Length: 231
Image (cartoon, rainbow, N blue to C red; front, top):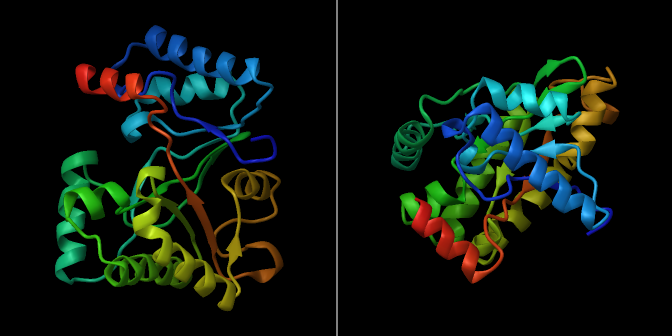
């Protein structure tokens, strides 16, 4: 795993929004220690369930994290039934989501919003499983990023990779053909924090950026069992 762009996703996959500052700090430090025991280093974080509160970001900055990607951003333009239903589900799950691509910078720390609808909304929420439909949706999200010269951060959990393989292959080809920047979150964070640019000012004049991410929420059967018991 060395060389991969790894980010911490909590230690026990529990909502940070519902934790006290001390509980968040203990969970975050446990995850940092677990990475350290295996010689793995990370500069990034994504909160379980995309749930945070103001204390979360203060803790991340104090631990010298470089980027966070927990703030949801609705990135599917259009007025068709899929877009409307996906927006309704996104708002029900995460509260009213932003609809404008942005990257918020605070000193040496940056927020890189994760795009919705993600695989959970599309597959579990809307029941979409057809490769052609998922390809169309992901392609439309890429079109929105191109129009806004923004940064599309897709989230596909590993257990649904097989459902999204065609869609991801298609969007990667699309971004390549259109001259977009395919980059990790760490690369994008480094570019923006170095003052080299951001949305509308990507490396080499590229029109927009794409990052494909996936949250590993559980590793063993015991992890899944504990999540069911907790939630």
